[in-house]
Length: 273
Image 1 (cartoon, one colour):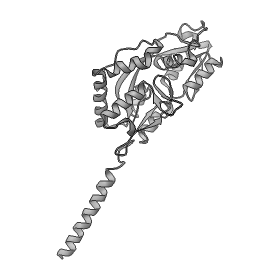
Image 2 (tube, rainbow, N blue to C red):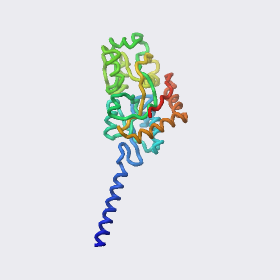
Image 3 (cartoon, helix red, strand yellow):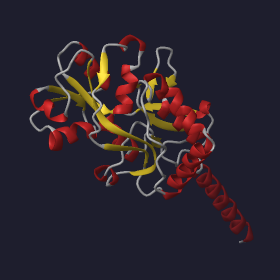
Image 4 (cartoon, one colour):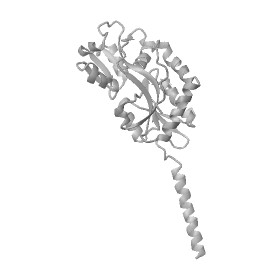
């Protein structure tokens, strides 16, 4: 009797040990113990760009690295995953990423599906036009123009629903496609956040070809998207962002990535908590 009880206890201990081991590896969405997967843009100069040598550069990339390090993940432990505008919520909800840092504006519609830490950056919607174009000086001028934006972006919705409902809006898969269309005169303007537009305009191969119209058509507060209800992760990310501002890293990164374009950024926004 005692032998059977001892055997049963031993078997139970093995089961518990195996269960604990299984729970300790890969149970967290977007992470597997010593690695973390983060969603970023691959096609936004100045914010999130995959370079020809396979590395990643931009303000959002460096913000993500800073936050990851504060969470205990060095750069070598990060797996970068492309997060197109239209796929960001799905990537988060499906657990494909731990969080998303991808010029991700906080709005009521998105808050119904995911949570946000931050905001960590404030910009405004603007237009990029060809350098020699003088026909677009106010938002109403877009009603007779071909306008390009990216599928799933708040910029496209804002123009079509509120600002210039008669604009011929074309929504493409990426900003680089819109930029090609603008250069080839297939479209007349590209709309998104001024920070993104400044990144494109300041690229060496584009200098002198385009200009920002200087229209502040909306306030865009960038946040870090994460799974809804994960208050623990949200709190940790917010603490990391607060530290990034207080230790001077935020200012340093802004100057590094946006300074060359002459873009005048807003001060660091207050973390919502």
